[in-house]
Image 1: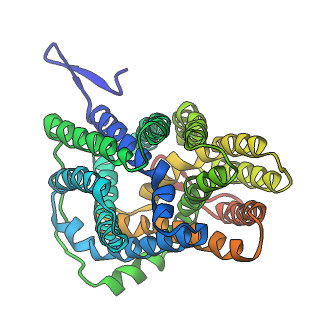
Image 2 (image 1 turned 180 degrees about the vertical axis):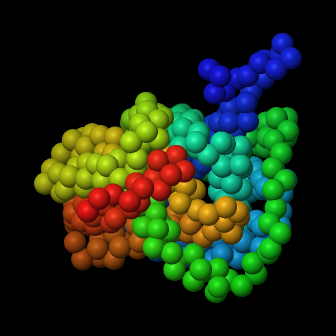
Length: 402
């Protein structure tokens, strides 16, 4: 309980991580609401699964370049002030999506939201790092992700109900409410992060090459990216697979609810364990579980068994999701976070891009079950890459014996 609340001068108050956890819950609900119906919403404009993959892939490209473009902004700005503005804009544009009928207006606003999202992700992650003692960073990441995944239990159920009872577009109104609540809480909690960099790195090309020239950062990038690669299957293609299997939107909510449950109950426990024994075994075990279950889905024809196997795969993801970011912060040198955390987050975009484009191409030639075979192969490749990581234990870098 002391993780969330401390007693100071006979008054109980939320800790910094406690405040950030609550805010992450409301941010997460708004994101989960939109994520649940996003593919269906895009499909309402184009009515083609493959085109949905290409469009969302194009957004990922925009996000990739945005992460490098915003480096000077992140370095010179107070993260708390910047995040506050972005949360307000999220609430506004979510509401705007409710009224959008024109495809090209949707593309324009969608691209703007992607840029705002890169700022939100980067600012929030750095604030969590700055509010954590280094020997507690892994634990705190586990707490934040636990609250975030509670949101991904609530969000899909709520989105499924709203979409089924009212309309898909109505979900954006509810998402706007939760985003605005996150903004109000952030202001009320008076979270301050005034850390700025003395040196501002404006050269996008140099930032790119400086990030990727380090082997440890490259490995961390791949390990973290595999999580987003998997979620692209879960949140883009499986909802469409459910709808095309003649199930209602409510089943999309049930499925995404199930996916989040193992994350809620296991991520904090795995994060605590990793802080004592290191990262490598956790990464490798997690990716192996996901690869095996994805391969099993290829051989199964019953949709309900497939959905159950994909829910079970979240156990593997629970080992990786909260620990991969903590691993990255642990391998950084002092004061590198403001410069390299945003490029690190391009792993989200690159792997979402591959996770959307590769199945889109595959589905032109082959039936949907081959998507599971593709993801089984990709997860196994990342399992092999994980074996090359440093065995970091709370700020101490230890090379495994070969």
